[in-house]
Image 1 (cartoon, rainbow, N blue to C red):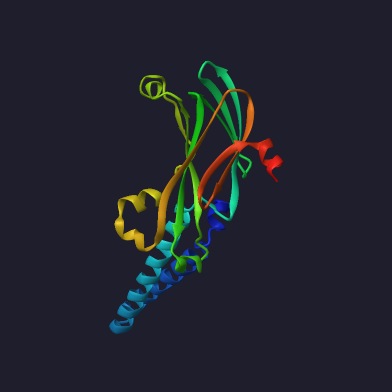
Image 2 (cartoon, rainbow, N blue to C red):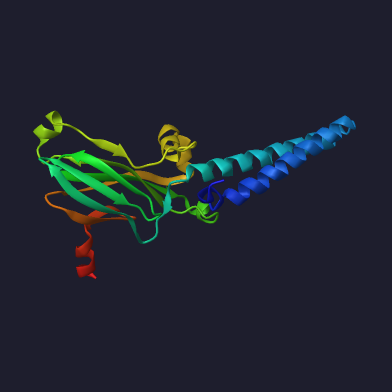
Length: 218
């Protein structure tokens, strides 16, 4: 089982509620065989309710995989960019969890966007706080004409998951009672020479700049 899943805030609720639900359902079946119908019905109802709550907690835990808790300002990735020809460059991402990935992009600029999920205050009590997930990286052109006619390149940064909370929130309006807000943020900078960039994310959105410039600002 993935450590990312077991460390999710709602995972213990999923395990406890799920286990209690199964136990009560089994107890309800036993009571039914003994013809204790009222007791059996009560245990079955409570058991199914607990199992449903456990399943919901488990689904949210799976959906949060790939998202990182957002504090004041986080480094989402360090990116090394190197030109590879006219309007072509390689972008190598170094993620905080140790993963690396390289992408060949076409354009004058590197473009990155992200999903940001903000939970209602009552969800904070269960450990669900504002979180982000990088969604895609693409090449971007200065000229609109090039955007329309030149080669386009885009690559996914988000990992596939069984439960996509972002897609569910966009598809179902009633989830607005759970998510305080769901929105996207993007940033882009020119690529004219080899450089190391720092991609940062805060509650106001994404920011990308040369890593050495960050050190001078502090």
